[in-house]
Length: 202
Image (cartoon, rainbow, N blue to C red; front, side, top):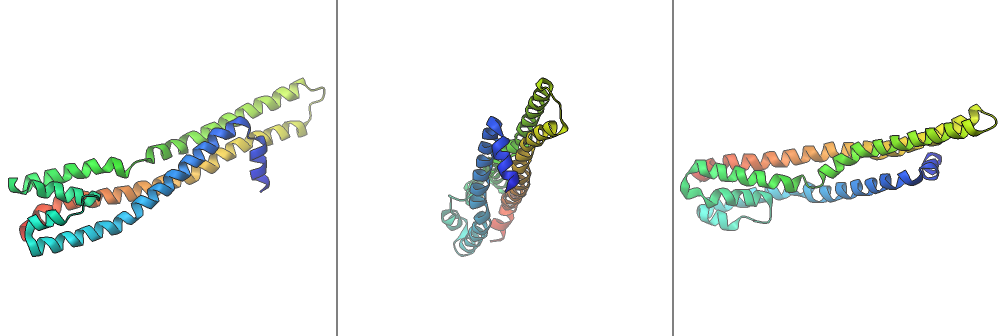
C-alpha cells in the first residue's frame, strides 16, 4: 500500500493518462473475454446442429437451420449459398467469409497493444521530468545533500513503476486474447475448408 500511495502522491498530471490507459485496457479485456470465451461452446453447438440438419434434411435444411448471428454460422451459410456452383467455390466463399469475421474477433486488441507500449513511455517521461526537477532543486539549494537527491529520484521512479504496472498485465492479456482469437479464426477456416467434403458425404 505504501508504494501505491507514493505513486498516487508523486505521479502528478502524468498519472492521468496512465489511469485512463488502465481503465481502457481493463474494459477491453473484460469485454473480449465476455464475448470470446463463450464463442467456443457456441461453435460446437452450431457444428452439431449443422451436421444433424445436413444428415436429416440435406443442404437446404442445413442452410435454413444455421444460426446467422454467430461467426461460424455465417461462414457455413456463405459456403452453402453457392453450393450449386461446385465445391471449390463453396470453399472460397467460406474462406472469404471467415476472413471477414477476423476484424470483429480482434476488436479492441490494437488499443490493448498500444497501452502496453505507451504506458511505460509515459512513466519514463514522468521519471525524466522528476529527475530534472530533483537536480534543479538541488542545484538551487544552499546545501546539496544525498538525501535530497535520493528523495527526488525515489519519487521520480514511481512514475515508471506506474507505467509498468499497467503495461505488464496488459501485455499478458494481449497475448492470451490474441491466442484465443487465432484459435477461433483457425476453426472458422477449417470449417470453410471442410465444408465441401462434409456436404458431399452427407
